[in-house]
Image (cartoon, rainbow, N blue to C red; front, side):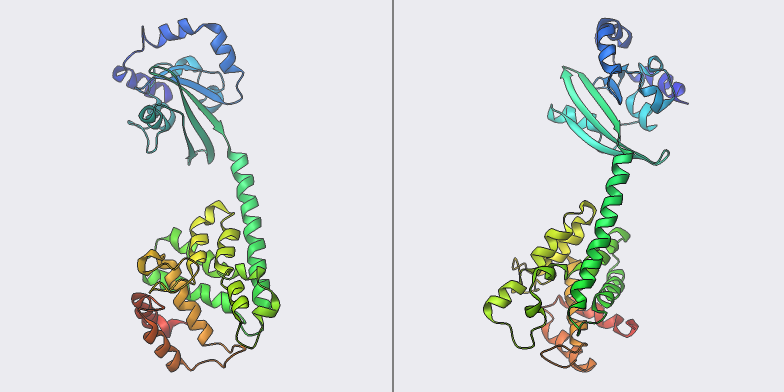
Length: 329
């Protein structure tokens, strides 16, 4: 199949100098010796994506002799595509006249590759491709372990407050139900799920005496409490794949009219997911006994949501929440 791809692409190619074969001859054995010493596969291409030279490590990747790749159309040979792939590093390198890099996942082999293009002279580019699968999988395992630690830490924070009970579980469940009502994609629902579960993790740096205080907080104590969204965003933001969840956590105490904290964001400047958590979090808090008051009746809690729609809460989120309220059991 690979040889057919190479043969079928040759008619499209514009040669550099005297062509790929001439370039190969002019490159000499010294260049090949250098390229063959590199522990990942390397090819030299021109701006028309023609493969001019390949080191011996490509054989491990493509099960073909490097000479059989010369003259091939790079997107066809590497990706089986008739044109450059989306975010093609060669196209980027040509556009900016400088190095370009991208990470590629090959579904067929379940492998991850780091692809880097370096311009080496006019119309010639050095293309390094390194298999980073083991590194990626080790990183994923580390991230999964870190997330588990964060989840345990978040549960520990909740356990400090005897009044909250299963607050995090309910906020997560209700937020997902509401997110689906808004038609959020699976990837956004996943980020919303993590954000809802971890939204109060920043309280780990708030002293226990403040978290469990039965009287009103004084100014200094309130300033400490108000830092928890930013702290939570920084903690969760250490996991690259939870970047959006971290942003949501950082915004879940913002208010629709701009009077919230920490940044005073307003309206749709606040992510929809954060606006969802704000409503759900407040609803569950109102339905729970707290040190400073007893739980509100359902009628009173509904009244509070409606009265604060447009100021504290997004009116559309309140409206959709009340539509699904009866399903929240």
